[in-house]
Image (cartoon, rainbow, N blue to C red):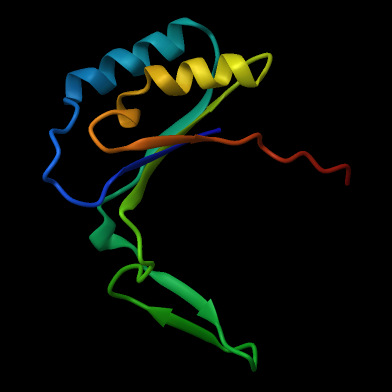
Length: 111
């Protein structure tokens, strides 16, 4: 999974919509795309925590994590190994302009 984190500030130049369209097309044409989604604006986020008594606590005005990056979306790709995944992450527009792409395998459980 490629987790795309963008810079929390808008000071840095941002990659263009066309950059994302081109990357999307390349991933699809390579036949490695399993799933991908862009997340809605951070202001639409709702944070849920569970208190000591098991009660649900909802914070409706966004996340409160102290961070310099915001999770903006993800790609799930099917590639043979970590090196190939890192190559695709380096091509991702989200890895530029102060952003980063975190590469993590999807956990598989025998149930």
